[in-house]
Length: 108
Image 1 (cartoon, rainbow, N blue to C red):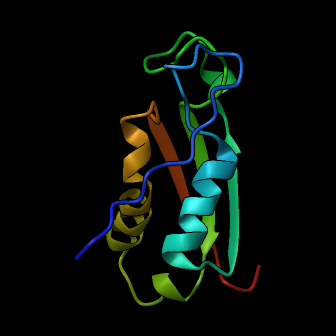
Image 2 (image 1 turned 30 degrees about the vertical axis):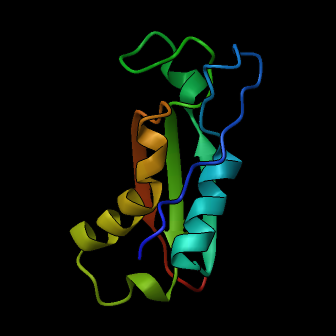
């Protein structure tokens, strides 16, 4: 039996029905799924204001993930990125539009 993880979303200044992903919520989901040795999640949405996928709020749509750990060892870059995308899949329906992924050495 599999349990689907529901994203932890924040409404911030948006209407209650327009919950958007946060860096903290993405970070928590990645910790739960991949147990990384190092992890940094940056919300770069403000730099993409007016671009496709921007929500007009300046947060919650464009993220950068720097992650490393044993789960990524020996995998191709495509397989490493797939692990991250799979862990964050619940956030796409909530507004996650763009994701830049950097796999980092575990020693950082």
